[in-house]
Length: 327
Image (tube, rainbow, N blue to C red; front, side, top):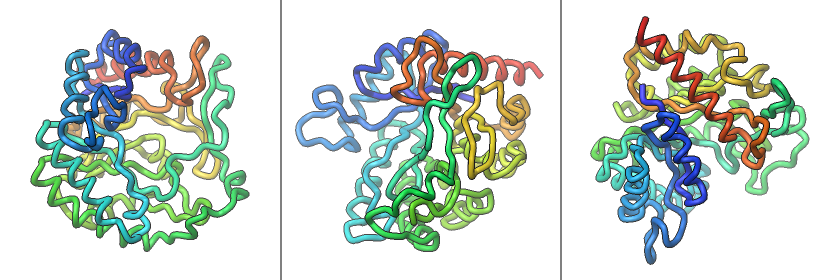
């Protein structure tokens, strides 16, 4: 397993990069080049070759190898099946082709339309006064419908199949793995919008929709914990198919209707057993900590990504991995 960390490519994240390297991280999970004058030149788009090359080189100069791009070009029209979706899918194909040219092996994407991950509270007191995020569906049910109108789950499936039939052959040719992230939270509908990546069965449907060795998953344990109580069984199911391409190592407490994040060592999931199962199925891809608590002395301006909280999570994961390797 490759211990990785989410390290944004923005220049202001340079200190975080150094902290990660000092903590022994060798693999970076990056976004798309966004900052003019750093990775982009002229009319280059973030998914074009030269900006991606520049970004990858910056990681390498910092002592990091770029394992995953966890960011997406705009896909609102593709998810809703609207005119202009082919142009959006073209940008994805360009991104994947250039990732292949540069040897960036995994693209983490999602199929959440209109909005991404949702929380109804980002400052819930946790251990020792640390802060975590949480979700209460009863509060979200009071939110107004989205302006674009309702979107059914079957429409999402139809549009996803259209997308994959365009993108999978490109990914196969480029040798880039497509790692679908779960809906967060995995509940449907939200504000009138269906959500389909919300159950173990639906993930199998994804893999069967367009069968390919590059069509796989991001196993975000926090989201899967809200789908099932048996995360090791999920790891075994998809790991034995060779379809786990990326892991978000985290935990939550509660139900899909109402939950909160936990410290990595304080949730209901047996994290040791999870890592032992990854080892047993031969998973050797990237794994990063996700949604850490905000701790004393750090800012909650970016909930879930406290620098100090990440250090705890990285050390915890490294210890578990070392224990698993030693048997």
